[in-house]
Figure 1 (cartoon, rainbow, N blue to C red):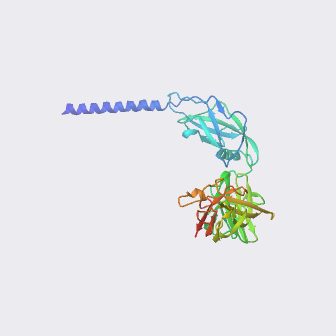
Figure 2: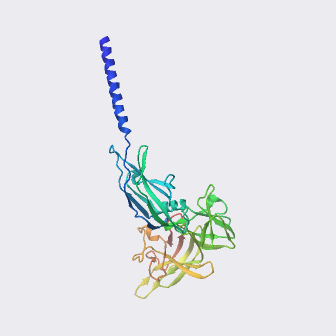
Figure 3: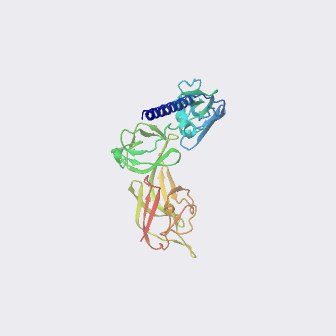
Length: 381
């Protein structure tokens, strides 16, 4: 019995020693964090000139030679940026390379690079230089590359940070002063926000959220600026566009909206504004144009406008397709009814009345707000 117990104790001691030895080996192996430096920076080339377009999906690709770990394990990378003449002791920005720091390359968006340029003191519409290098690391051992490079960036005139959402609020707006009721603007391409809305006498401003303490913006002539508010003296309907990438603003008054029949080359029904970017017309007579041997049923929508100086203009909204050969029916996809701004051609980018509409009447509705894609509805009865 005693011999058996001793045997078990000996086995346990051997196991503990074996585990301890194994752990010791693992510990010894794990502390080998020796790595080489990055020897070469490949791209962008020295002095590369970059005109930044932060509102787009454009990227700049950075590439460098791989560092090596003595134990053959992975090396992690960060790209560091500093001001011209900086020593990278406190870089203004660092970012992990592609694949969470594993790859010896980095795809950096113009939006982020524009923010880095701002941190370096390069002003909007200004041009300046940035230094960059690569830091390789393994564990606590980090080594900066053997060299640095300089890039030259030109910043746009717009905002460094383009908001994800923009709303209009204030006593002049349709939602009034209640921030929670602020109307959302529709985000388009390249950092442009748009809204069709009615303003009455009072004040209005633009905000990046409809709760809490938002960042505010206002219009100064044709410029978009942070802070401030605008005054409206009378009731009017507008299309308002805010271009954050270029700090530009545009307010176009909408004086009339009508259904434009191509063959008649004029509007055959005027729509009334009903709020929240919508217009409607009930019981509009539908009459195809009779050419004798055939009848034409094409139409789009005409918007009469006035600019800030009162100069009259016209714009058209119609189909995404240059030509629609068949009238819509119950199986027509929603995309057919989508509205986009089109040219002033008489026949192109038009829709067709539903089959059998000639001589009947219909209810027309335009929906141009942020709830969904701009679209029209036509109900024939």
